[in-house]
Structure formats: C-alpha cells, structure tokens
Length: 55
Image (cartoon, rainbow, N blue to C red; front, side):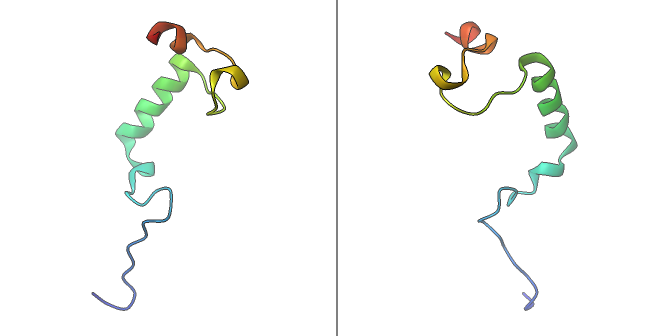
C-alpha cells in the first residue's frame, strides 16, 4: 500500500457499481417499466402499480 491508496466505505458508490453497464441497463429498464418514486412510504408518495402487483 502506498500513501495514496484509499478504501472509501462512506461514499454511496464504494463498491464502484454506479458505472457498471449491466446495472445501468437494469436500472433503465426498471425506470421504463415502473417509473420513479420518492423513496417514501405509500401513504406519503402514493401507491404505484408495482405495489399492487406485489401485494
């Protein structure tokens, strides 16, 4: 290890998956199919189609 090596576990992309082409493709497909939500509970953000399908 040199003094310049750094292992950053506090960033959101510490696994380096944000640039993975397979993950990007899967995310785009999920957006096309399900849309985007606000990452909150249903009574705040509403019920999406995927909620009804999974219930």
